[in-house]
Length: 161
Image 1 (cartoon, rainbow, N blue to C red):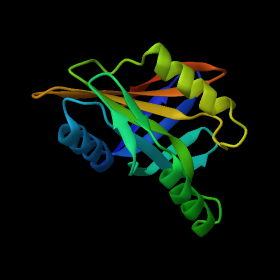
Image 2: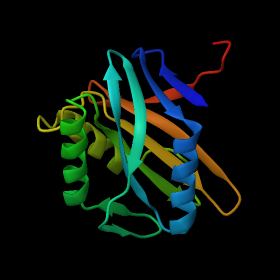
Image 3: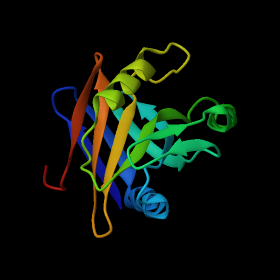
């Protein structure tokens, strides 16, 4: 099933399959109680961002309150899919977990995402951020998107909206 998230203020929307969300939860549980994360790749069509895949880094550092990915292998993967898709598949953003925490972004998360949006080497104008708050019993998540150097929360859309 495809889930749609929208920010009415920006008009930007994200589409993701429940299989991708379930996969993020699985990675989060495997690394619990430490943070873990990766990147999204997919397509951008005007104000619609379509997540096609997630990728995890081969090398990373993590703790209960910290996750840093090493980008070398991820950059090679992104170059490969970009080339193989004739530029249709691109880097879309980041995801990580907050063990025993909520899915709200930190000032570090915001600084990182705004920096990604400002980076001219990264061709994503509106990078997305997914944070999964995970505990032994629960998993809740939020999507955010960068627009004009600010993070905006995306709201899950229901079929009648």
